[in-house]
Amino acid sequence: MLDTSIEDFLNHLAVERSLSIHTVSAYRRDLTKFAHYLEENFLSLDTAKEADIAGFLASLGHLAPASSGRTLVAVRRLYHFRNAAESPAAAIRPPKLGMRLPKALTIHEMERLLTAAGGEEPGDLRKLALIELLYGTGARISEAIGVDLDDIDEREGVIKYRGKGGKERLVPLGGPALAAIDAYKVRVRAPLAGKTRALFLNARGGRLSRQGAWLLIGEVAQAAGLAEKITPHALRHSFATHLLEGGADIRSVQELLGHASVATTQIYTLVTIDRLRDAYLEAHPRARSKR
Image 1 (cartoon, rainbow, N blue to C red):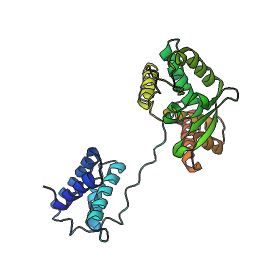
Image 2 (cartoon, one colour):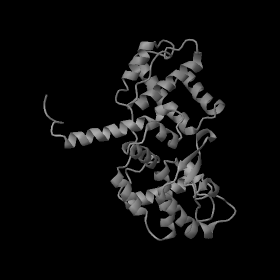
Image 3 (cartoon, rainbow, N blue to C red):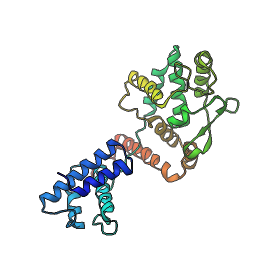
Image 4 (cartoon, rainbow, N blue to C red):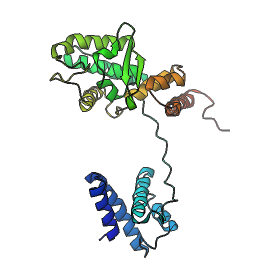
């Protein structure tokens, strides 16, 4: 049985903070582990010191850093709930998370995906237009499905996106994306269009949902044999990575992606460096030589 203050804390999260049942369950699992650790070491919430909590985190070494960090958050919030001024967990640092590089497709894989999306059926035309738009402009999926007809200036070859925080930006539209969008508008969208100005429509003539968009992309990825490589941001990552590999400067890529800070965009330079390193190791005769 859990300490009554832990139960009070969980009730506080569920009732007063209105957290979801899944979030409260996660807190319960983490705090149950903590309670068992204290019991096994003849400690309690009142007697545990900073070193004891650090020892508890060390005992979770088999977990990923993100999971250990989440557990520390649960313990910190529990002590803050009990007495914010005297928390033995306040000064403990969470484990460092390993840097996760975005998963970008190679240009060859991208070509396979676009080929798999090709076809003359209405569904094919919509898939190709969506994928060309995402890869050709680096849009977030929420931005792509939020596009209205008035947001596209075909004469100037630009599209307007509404990004995070409602910020608007203009992004160039390449020829393949414009051609795919035009074919979709004429042959697929026009018969479905009602009052909505949305570019991408579902089968009932309403705006395509985020879930519907990823279902379409997932079907193409499966057909291309790339299902494991396609994630919600894979096409955006590929857009940025391929631009940098092609010689684009990072500030321009920042503007195209709609990043508030160039520091966010810099992670893509690590992707390109990683690929350059692989190419060097595979091709250079001295790359693997002993010193």
